[in-house]
Length: 114
Image (cartoon, rainbow, N blue to C red):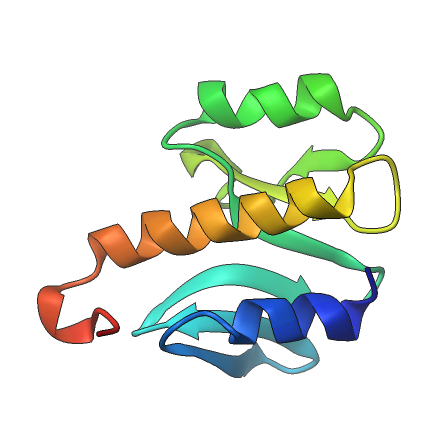
């Protein structure tokens, strides 16, 4: 999966939109919240991989070369998953789906996509 394909997959979610809150760092939001950090390169995505660090650590155990704790927000269950490495594309897509669903579930009802 390329960076462009990953971005397109993220943007295909209901209510998803692209933002660049920091110069050169692309994120995808739903409502006012980020569910995927795409940055600029290398190909990878920062996603919510669980409700807490313990659950998110399962990714690190399964893919030690391709998954890492995100700086600053990693303690809340966010990881960076490298694309094009050892993590199959379908698992990356599933992680994006889970991150999207986790973020949507926490949005105020007025911000949730219909």
